Every structure is written in structure tokens, then in C-alpha cells.
Image (cartoon, rainbow, N blue to C red; front, side, top):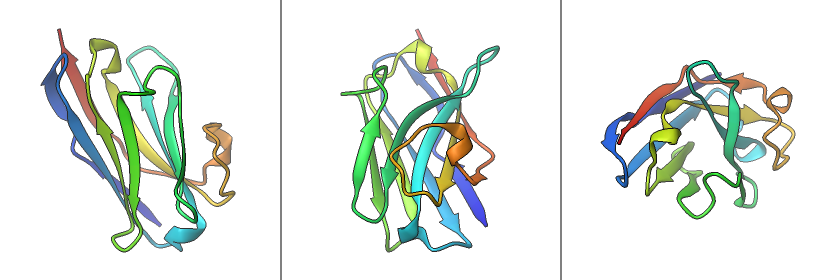
Length: 123
């Protein structure tokens, strides 16, 4: 099983970035994929998730209206489009896969994790 994030980088406040999570080694349609982030000195927190079987999505309040999660099941890839970025969005972003198909951002529900990609938003 492998999850590989890409697309991170440095952007000014108000800018946009698009993250990708390429998955392999499991039946993509049977899983939910979540995006999490961890800022220095803080706990890892959930951002958004998508259930690949029906495309249902969930967002946490800090990113609602600014981030959009989507999935290309043919490419086994999930995307996180991040707009109107703020300095407080600075973190390492991780994608994770859950076999429970729940729209949950509880970390214990996730079976596999990627290595993360750094997102830095300058003020």
C-alpha cells in the first residue's frame, strides 16, 4: 500500500495550491481518503475527507468554503484544492486511507498514511 502526496510549496497569503494524493495497493473505490495537517508544535488535525464509493465529502470549519476535495477514481488520486490560503494553514499535509468508508476525520479510523507534503503560507 502506498500513498504519495505532492503539490506542496510556498505561497503568499490569499494564494492557492493544489495537493494530490496518489494511491496504490488497495481497492481505491472501497476506501475513504482524508487530508490531515500538522503544524509545528501542534497535534495532527483533520482537514477534509471524501468517500470514494459515492463522492460524499466533509470539511472542518477552518477550511470550509476555501478548500475543495475531489477524487479521480480512474487515476486512484484524490486532490485538495486550497484557495484563499492563510498563514495559519502552514503545516505538513498528509493524506490517509480508511477502509471504514466513514466520513470521519478521527485518526484512528485511518489504516494507511502518506509521508506528507509541506505547505507554507507567507503573510
